[in-house]
Amino acid sequence: MEDLPITILSRFDELYKTLSHEEERIAVPERELMLETLKRCSFRMFEETDEYFTSERAKNFPHYISPTFGDHAFRVYYHSYSSKIYIDLNREPIQAIRITRDTEKTVLCEIIRSIILVDPTI
Image (cartoon, rainbow, N blue to C red; front, top):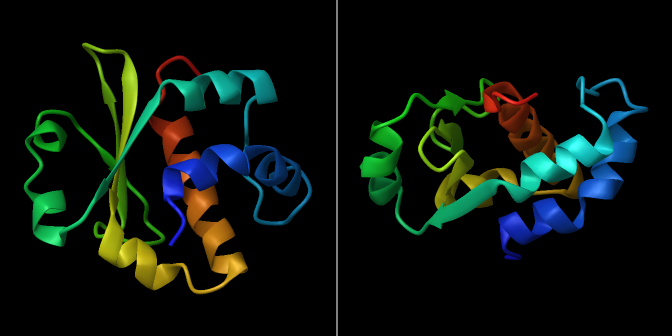
């Protein structure tokens, strides 16, 4: 499986165009602002589900979980000390929902939506 964080960054332009035309679009900020936000993100893919749930870093900050995939796929939170947005990805559920290109797009859209919701600068 291709590394999801690399996928998110490399396919951002394609997603941005898609989101601006399709029914499932979300209110996305200007492209430059969104790129700056993505550059401030730190992605971590957990190998084990147990490790994902017991992450100390995540426990210390309020986090947002996608309503589409529940609390098992990924969470996004803002680290006020580093001014970074952290995205914790649970490898097992992410693999299970990345069945087709369409579902992959849905996952990436949900992650971008979550980043926007937690970013205090937007």
